[in-house]
Length: 188
Image (tube, rainbow, N blue to C red; front, top):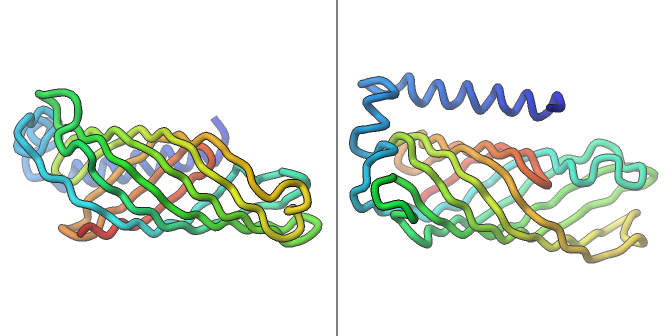
C-alpha cells in the first residue's frame, strides 16, 4: 500500500472511531439500535450535493505531468432507500459529478471529468456509513496535453465513508480510481 493510501486509511479509521465514540451506547449498541446496521425498518435517505478537493492520481506522471490537484462537485440521489438486503440498513444510490483537475508538466494542463456512478452503502450507525462505488467517467483534456487526445473514457471505482455531522452536513472521504478525495455534503 502506497503512502497516500496509508494516510487516507488512517484518516478514515480516525473519522470512523470518532463517529463511534460520539454515540451514547457504544458501537455495539449503535449497530443493533435504531438506524444501526441491523435496523431493517423502512428508511428515507436524503439527496446531497457534495463539494470536494482531492488528488486525481490518474494524471500523476502522465506524460511528465507533475503533482495534480483537483476539485469537484457531485449530486447524490438515493434510488433504493432500503437497499437489497431486507434485514440490513443499506441503500443503493446514483451519483453524477464534475471534477476539474490541474497539473503542470512541460506546460499547464487541466482535465474536466464527468463521472457517473452507483454506490451501495451500509449504514452502520445513524451518523456513519461506508460505501462501494462503481461506474464510468468521461474526460476532456485542455491545455498543453490536449494534443494527446481531447476526449477519453475511464472506469470509476472506490470505497468511501460518510460521517453525518448534523442534519444537513456530511463529511465524505473516498479512496478509489481515479481520485482520492475529501468533501463536504449538503443534504436536502
